[in-house]
Image (cartoon, rainbow, N blue to C red; front, side, top):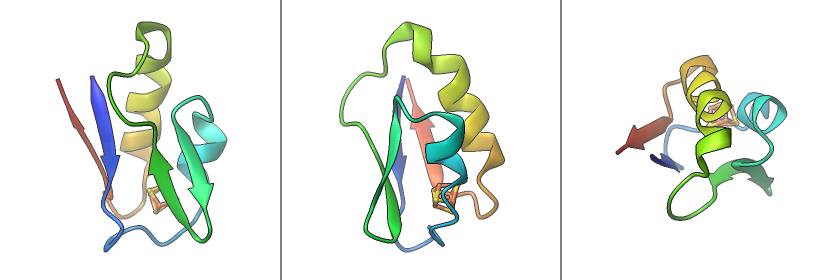
Length: 62
Ligand code: SF4
């Protein structure tokens, strides 16, 4: 699974980075996801973080 943060939607609430710091981090006021494939052990938390994003800024793909 891969994840990307849409910078035009992210409001910088830091929730994703708090829930899944292995994948999401804050770069200035916006969140970014690690590029490429998310390690299998981090996928459940990454999905949880994507679902928790209040503005739906995190897109996931297989
Ligand atoms: S949870 Fe959503 S709005 Fe909040 S920092 Fe992460 S991507 Fe941005």
